[in-house]
Image (cartoon, rainbow, N blue to C red; front, side, top):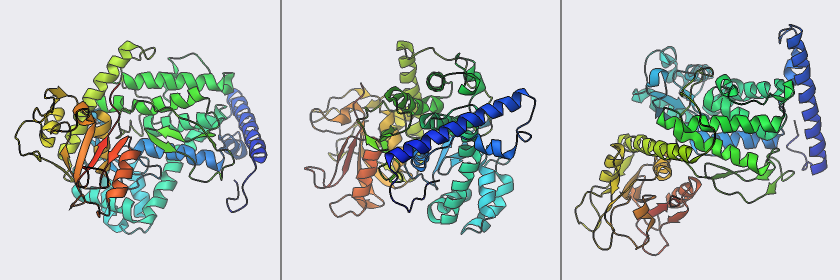
Length: 489
C-alpha cells in the first residue's frame, strides 16, 4: 500500500505498480485454476495463493469504488452511516430495514453488524445489545426505538463508523475482490462492477451468467467483453424486474455502462457521475492518475436503492430478461418509474419529518396542493395542476427523480413543501412539468436570507440531481427554495 504521508506518486511509478499488481492477479488466478483442476481445495492451494488471488487496487481506485457505491446506496460520497430505508424486498416481499453506509438488510446481515457494534463498547452498544437475537427473527421494521438507536449510533458514534467500515469490507468488498482475482479480472472498472453486484445483488448472479456467452479471463475469456456483457445483462434484468423498487435501481447499471462506454477501465477519468453526483477519489491519489473529462449525464431513475438480499445470490427474481435497450425496454422503464413514483410518494406521506402544504399562498382552493399531489401520486394517479392566474390546469405525473430527491433530503432534514406542480408560476416553469419542489420551512424555521441551513440544503439538492436551485438572494425566492430537476425527455 502507498504511504499516503509521502510525496505524490509519479504517473510512471504508479503505472509500473499497477502493471505489477495486474501481473500478480493474473498469476494468482492461473494458480487457483490449476489447483481447482487438480482437485485441490482453496486451503490446500496455500494461504499465500489465496491472499494473492485478490484484485489489487491502488488507494485512489479503491476510494473511487467505495465512494461510487456510497452514492448508489445512500446518495452521499462519504456514505451515511445512520441511513435507514424501508423496502418491501425481504423474504416473500415483506417490508424490512436496510441500514448503514452500504445498506445491509434486516433479514440478511444486519444482525451481524449490530452484534459487532454491541461488542465494541460504543455509545449505544448496551441499548442495542438486547435487539441482537431478535434481528431477522422478529420483525423490527416498525420498532421506533430500534430504528432511532440505529440512526443515532450511525450519526453520532465514531465507533459505529469504524464497525461499519470493517463490516462492509469483510462482508462485501474483500469477497468481491477475491472473486474478481480468482477469476482473472485485473481492471479497476471490473472491480467496481463486481463490487456493485456483491453489494446490490448479493454476489455475481449465476443465472445471469447463463444469459451471455463470454467466459471469465481465468478461463480464456476477454475481461472487457465479459464485464460489458454481464453489466448489460444485469441492466436488462433490473429493467424488467417484477418488483418496482428493484426496477428503479437500474440507474446504477446505466452509470456503469456509461463508464464502460467511456473506456474508463482504470477509473482514471474523473469525476464519475453516480446517479447525478460527481465522484472522484477525494484527494487520495494526489492527482497522480486524475484526468478530468466531460461526463454526459445519464437518465436517473431513483435515489433510494433497494438492497436485493444479503443471502440471495442464487435466487431468480424475474421471469426473463430483455435482449437490448429497445423501445419495449424503454416502455418498461416508464412503467417502472410510474410504479416507483407510487412507492416514493407513499414514503413521503409516511415520513413525519415532511410537511405538505394543504393550501396555496394565493388562498385559492383547488385539488392541486402539495399534499394532494402526493396523495394522488401515492394512489397511482397523475397530480393536478392549478388553473388560476395563468397556470395551465390539467394533470402531470410527478417525476421520480424529484420524488427520490425529496425522500433523500428527509434523511438529513425536516422540512415543509409548499408546492409541487400546483400553484401559479412563470409561464415556462418546471413546476408544470412535475419535476420541481418548493421548500419553505427547513428544520423548523422558515426559509429566509439568514437561515443557517439554506446553503447546505441547496447544495444537497444539486448533489441529488436538481439543476435549477434558487433560494434567498434570487429574485422572488427569499422565502423558499425552488429545486427543479431536468425536464423529462
